[in-house]
Length: 422
Image (tube, rainbow, N blue to C red; front, top):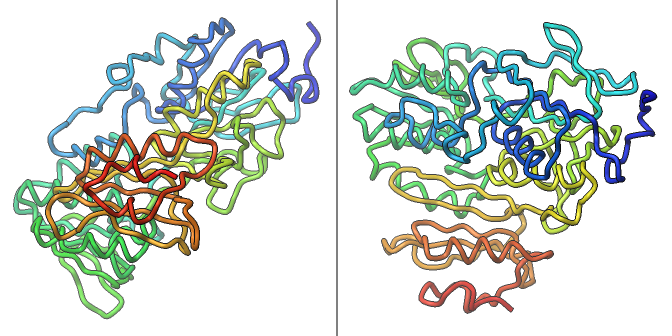
């Protein structure tokens, strides 16, 4: 068979599937990609490259169950999909070092040489951000990170968490409940501002004191040392352990120069996870992907559902049956923090109008809805301690467009959320 050029296989939606597939990454998105290939009867060769050296595991429990689950939650047990048996070859300790698109097939450079395949799936995930000069701080993104942090959080230890986002709040809660002295330092005026905006973020402030956590907002860390953190106003917050929980970035440095990357390192992809500006044989899914969504616009990676369900759309298109899979997965975040259960569906915009559902001070759970300004379109729905609203919110974001809700009905917590649909 003659070698294929980029033009020959730039569109795998045709009748001929790739003869072999190379998946870079060994997390949730990679596991689901390989599982989807096999579920669709693909019998070509599949090779997987992982960087951490251990079998695929679920990341959310690393923070939510930091202290009560000392071992990783293996995806083979959680999903019933064993990457090690589904793929033809899995190299768990072989990180990708570079990518070449100059030949007939994508070629990935590793320490052991170059591997090539008809199709490449970039699923190399993300890594925790640790600003320069913060080398004394721990981070939490991998099982190894969790092991180091867990060993340091003994009762009575002093922990400073930099950042009151999803991870920071989750760790603060579980650590305080275990007898650790916890201080959270947040540069914004309230927790979760980047994710939920200041109006809703401010409503979570009382949770910290109730959980026994000291929260400092509007404070900027200028130095991290072995004895704690120094703030911009000159104060030192003493600590035995410092956790930098200031976000994550796509792990795509290995692609430098080979694919067009966004400023944060993400790869812009279409609804079928084709990397824009690259041959159709190159796909990206999971944390690395900035996906085009007809419903939400450009959806960044980092959403668990995107890694769980996105590969089905990728594989369906790769094998030539794109209509067989739902392609527009709604952004979804779930969090257990400071004694509260949160779920967020959709993507809030800064200029949305926030409407509360229920009373945050009432003790019976509440929610928030982000309406596009001057309209009935809802861009995001948050539920807090209201499990009965979770299923309805999820279903509302399965239609082709944004859900439309009657504001008067939606704010009434005594009425089912689905009754507010217009």
